[in-house]
Image (cartoon, rainbow, N blue to C red; front, side, top):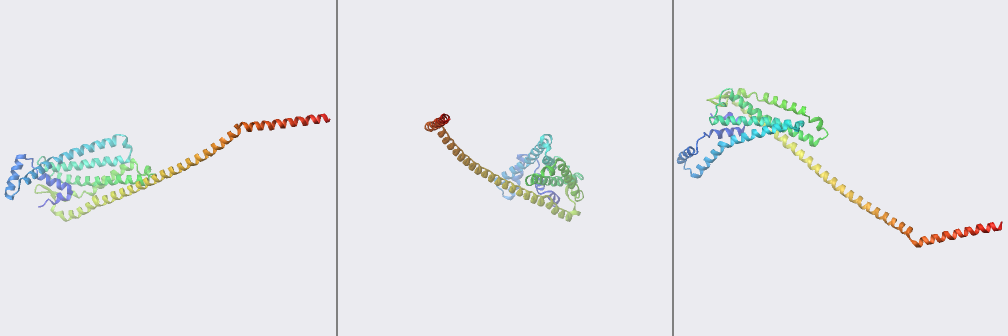
Length: 316
């Protein structure tokens, strides 16, 4: 029976599981001997042998490395977002919840990897099979919808900045995170019925093959198509708003520069006129010839007035 149910989980999880099943922790010598035996019957050359070995050797270690690095990075992000001054921002709670769900998804991948390589055999046990597949669906759903919620908050902050303090609050962010979590747990509860252990492997229950196919289409729409449309659309609108703001800012700066230059020119013109008039007045007041003439006129007037007064007194 093909591994139908594993393919229904997620394409990348299925790929990791199929890669992990090809690995059995053999040494380099054992791998080369196995590849040489196979290639002797199929006329393979040394290049194919070496390529296959290095790919298997690489796949043997890159999954644990990715899981460890991802979990550590998510843990540090969680601490920074919720234990520093960033905890007063509503967006920090979306990112912290995203770190938790991503770590959960990585843990599910690590369990599948370890089960496929014989480290632990929990994934193929009844009960654990349903639980881990269920958590995989829940974590993948929450991861993408937390990103959508964070993008919506960015969209509101850019397009409607005056409404952001009233809409994007910490309490509302907590409520949205809790609501999405409840929806995810309820929405994927069907996994406990369609998942089962068949031939000691975690597979799709043969009685629900048709239902699983329908559910897979719905899950693809809910966790892929709709979030992608929302995220791309809102980011495009955000970019458009930022470009408009930038153009308006540049226009405002250029207009201010033009007005400033005009005002400076007008000020210089007025200043030059006032300076010239001041110079003329100074020249008028400071000219010695003009002052002498004025003094002469004043003196002549005084002399005439005195003569007139004397003559009037003499006649009397």
